[in-house]
Length: 185
Image (cartoon, rainbow, N blue to C red; front, side, top):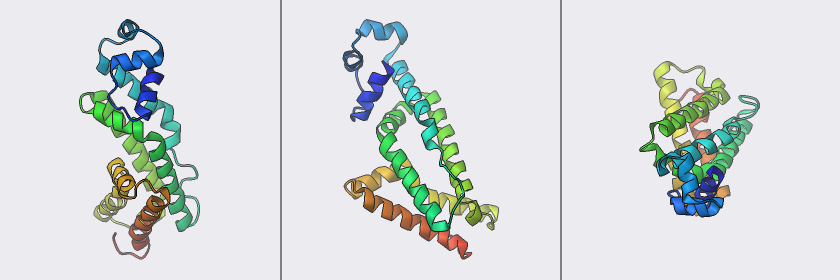
């Protein structure tokens, strides 16, 4: 049942009915309600299942290793792959998080993992900064990598992945490159 919900999410329906899920799963509505008291519980379980399934994918390999330009390209490529893989599930999860505190907590935990990998990957650039400068630089650089920013870029570039990649690399190069020359982003 959970895989059926995830499949429906991946097809673009972020708010499937129990009838749709039952049909996709090949079970009756009664079977779904045997395991889930309410439709929202089914949605929450599916989102949680999907998010846990992709946890290994949110970790960036070889954190902090390589030349500046290589680290930027690897970071951007990783985040773009995550967006392409997780966008449908994230849309559904963001909707569900409005009424399900558990999902909102899982989002926050995932966001912290992503932030930590960002900080570790570019630790060399952030190291010389004071606390306030570092916070400002991190927030500025990370803005382009928020889910909503990816949605905006996807829409604005008509899904042109190469163009999105170029924009994101330019953004990080400008922000973090300035840190390398002691000027805040």
